[in-house]
Length: 68
Image (cartoon, rainbow, N blue to C red; front, side, top):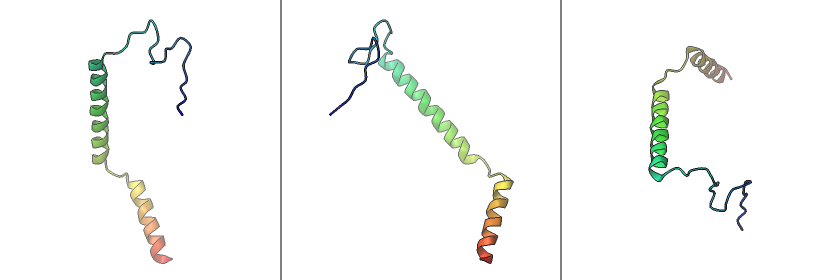
């Protein structure tokens, strides 16, 4: 069983009258831009160094584990 919520003035196909539909090429272009930006952010996060304060916390935790 599927449940669909229609917004005021929206037809079953999801298109609202008076609002132009994005073309498939435009949608593909947007998807490409999103994918490219996500990859860029992910790759940038891989090259970031771990801050010294976090490394110190990890060292403290390891030291406490050894003593326990």
